[in-house]
Amino acid sequence: MHLIQRMKIWKELRRLEQRAKEQPSPSTFVDLGQVYINLDLHDKAESMAEDGLALFPKSIELRQLLDCARRGLRNRRVQDLRARLTRSPNPKVYRELATILVDLGDNGALQALCQEWSLRFPDDAGCWLVLGQARLTSFYRDLAAREGHEAVECLRRAVTMDPADQQARRLLGEVLYRVGAVQEAQQHIEALRQLDPADQEVEALLSHVARLPDRGTDVDALFDDVETHGSLLHPSLHAAAPAPTADRTLGSVREGLGHVAQLDGVEKATFIRGSKALVKGAIRDGRDPFLRIVRVTAKAAHRFSRRLDIGSASKTVVEGEFGRICICVYGEALAAAQCRPGTDTESVLAELQEIVAGALHGAEEQA
Amino acid sequence: MSKIQDAITELRHAPGVRGAAVVTSDGLVAAASLSTGLDPDVIAGLASYLMMTTNRSLSEGHYPACTRLLLNATHGKAVFVSLDDSYLIVLFDQFAEVAQADREVDETVARIRRASRLA
Picture 1 (cartoon, helix red, strand yellow):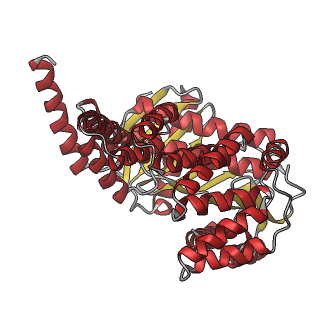
Picture 2 (cartoon, one colour):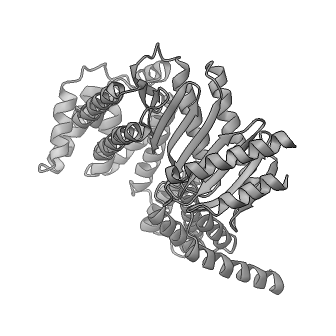
């Protein structure tokens, strides 16, 4: 880079650093992080994104910056590890490099690396485990039979080469029972229990699998069924467990909405999360225009405040001849009410805030 | 036009107000008095987007148009008041009590309406 260009960049960098200190906002952190990335200082960009996220934990731009910085760091680490492998190849370095390639989602490079790994160290089961993990991730994402079949092949090979490999057995057992090959899965989970008798999770998994109906041993046909139906046959252990927090949260939201609907002047109220909405009051059905107005206005207000660098829009009141529409948003949760003219919007907004905060707290507990 | 600008400049001195502007519904700045760091064109564009989007969704649902919109964000607040073919936007800092500035905002709206009629 030309010296004058370099000096200009450093000058700009100092200006942005000063700005980030004096007026911290997601965009100042992102601008600074971008300059660091352009200068190939990914570690600085990462710490800048982390500092920004400590102040603005919900900023999508800062998360993207962190992701980009970490990707840059991983790419650099890949280059270092490749150089080390050229000098002195060993299974440990192969494993580290393969794990980074899995994180980067570079399946082509991973395939080539695992081939090289298995040729140089034919007795090491590690390459088959990593390859199996990568295939399994693709299978769970796309439910493509071919990916599932290849994942099982790789994991079976890893288990045959190293029967004491707990991770390979666990992954194999799990994918098998989820597609319906319960009997074969039970054998792997039983072996897992013998390897570590104190593991409570394996115990729970075994009793969960014991309750599921077996659909035979033709794994290829089972994978084809999954692809055709677009869903796995059996739920995972965590998905099958009851979710008391979710029920409690829903109950408290319903109760809160009922309370809002009873306030003087309130005509209708709703709680929206994702594509689902709970409603109270004079709402006909899911196509009631009030629901759309609330969604559209909340989104536009959010965009307005983000672009203007004033954070996230948490409360919005739309006034017109119809009265007032009060909207309260935190994260993904939104609560809103339509009131007649002259209604005390402060108390309505306070109630809506309680509903949204309660739902958010419930979601965090679940997480 | 100077009367509108005077009204805006006066409103700018109300407690907690970071800036005020009158923008047309298609996003052009008619008058503005903003603190440093606030770009009138950006504010006009964003305000027009917010009001147009809200009004479109209201009209699609057969609701009358929005006459006033109050927005409360983490680091600031904003009030939008619909004038005939334009909007008054008042930006506040996050600590401002918007209700306390209601009187000043209403007075400014009345002055702008008067000035527009005379013009």
